[in-house]
Length: 272
Length: 272
Image 1 (tube, rainbow over the protein chains, first blue to last red):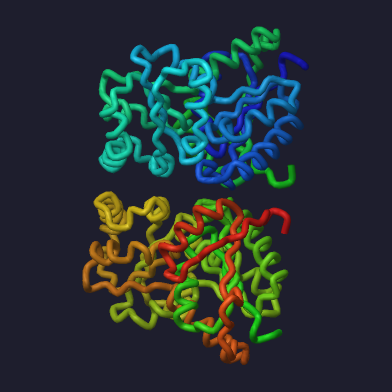
Image 2: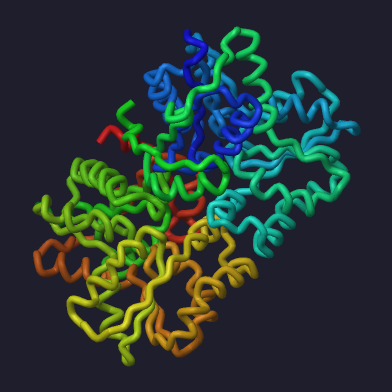
């Protein structure tokens, strides 16, 4: 495998761009091929079987682009599909769940960790199961926040409605004495300030996007696969593919990443 | 075609059940086969190409069940895909847009009609284009309300948050002097009371679900295809198929239809 090959990153839609943003920041010489499954978004309300089938199609597409590593920048896909996909692959496959969970274990002082995410991620209890393997005595409180994704996609990032919904979802967590909260959905860093305000200063927010980029860098370094020279101008360092609605994707993407995304290509992911 | 054959009804998810409810009420002897595309919901943010491809797959599935007529109980599918599908079919195909638009033309006294719907339905301007064919001088104001579907699916039917969002979406319509408002998304009848309160008494709400069932009855009558005897007990008069998440579908479905839906079968719609 060529170290100058791109990294494949996928998500159900635009949320995974918060992970791309971190990869761009932490390992700026890497090429990235991003796929957002905008035709079939959201994954958070779908079953394990469906999310796994969709993830496999995307992985097949990314492999055809000769990626050197794959990042599942989606908590739902990481929770439901990653273990199976990892087994079948000979290149590194990294999800957002494990790096986020490990960071929370490092951060917590009182051993009480909260997790927020989509219905699917929370229903899978993946964070609880993973953390319990290492720390049996940690208390983990999970809470699904299904309206956060549509509110973010509607652009209500600083808005009284988002505040009100956040207070409803988070009040039980905020009263529970946790000192650490995992933002277990890639959309949530975009309403980090609202969540932080509701939770108060005593709670550290863990953003798995940051931790995932950090782990990706470590894995590539270990495998001697870091790209050694920055791609030149006009070299298409970052390429974006979606399953629907390229224009809407570009509009939202440019509000997440300050890079200037000019184009996204639509592919029929059901053919993969 | 056998008049005792079932009617095929489809929607992107559960919203189309408001149309099923009306068909059950208005022509209670008919059999119904319902398909909800719960794996790929929502349609309202997808492109015309994608919605048309998905609708064709569903129509192929319904044809295999030997339905005698097809109802696209989804405004987005009706707006984007129906004209093309209708041309290819030798059985009646009915959407929700035309019956709703015709009812609004009948109801309005001042010639000012409002339409609310998903981004896709409103972006297509289907209601405006259809009504303008008949009444050039009618004024039509359209407004997308993208958060209504997730709010309904979260069960916030009578809730201050839904009130607040409704006031934001509807204030410009409510100040515009319309006397008729088309509920241009099959989820919206479920928040009819909230919408009605914001719009005030001077505005008549048109529910295309009611009008669609009415038109279906008229078409079947004209073609002498009405079922002449009520199916017996244990005869599976109503059958439900979904592309994902049967249990969640059954739970929401039973809150919309008081019939007692006991089962829904999951199929892989991408194979059709």
